[in-house]
Image (cartoon, rainbow, N blue to C red; front, side, top):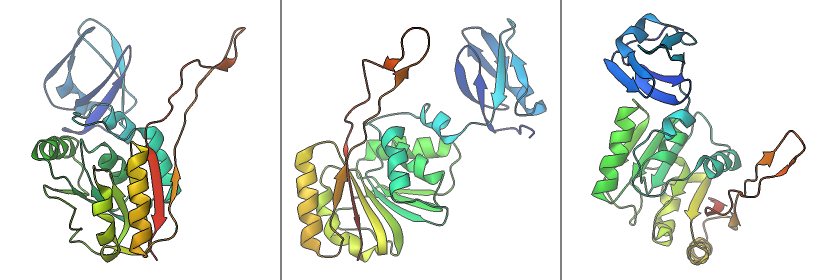
Length: 247
């Protein structure tokens, strides 16, 4: 497929670079690349710096974009994001309501799967960063609102409600007004004290199935040579994930 002007392109070589075709000169530690010339290339072609370093131009995937976003608060990583998407069977026709946009990492991840994301972010500084990330990467199916979700969402008939915020228990009583019967409530909690408050709010609402709380642990392995074993360090606890369905 031909690369067009303003397309995002991932250059894979000694290092990976996410660039925009047609954006002039781009400096790497191995020399300059003429990004204007990318629009004459196809994905899969090789480009070279003025010093002769080669890079392969490929179409970036969502994970490549997430590595390059501007960050403010801690983001939901792909370990948890992927599990959440699989756990709720996030699909191409889904409407997602999100409270706590942060840097918009989870927002961008879900936007690559779902039909529409409407995200509320109270903090002005986080809102500006999130909006900038969405606009920078040309994501069209996301609406970010600089407002609190503590009194609920104005939208109705959503398929998923995703909460990643300081006091999700304040939002949970309002969720039934905005979530379809059978729709999923997902709460991302870094500490167990928040999980208890979430469970209490879900139970008190009497509008959800019994909540399940889980966490995802990742362990990589060293393969090859005389040593095949789990790596000493692993990606352990990042957050508790709580799931319940609207009834």
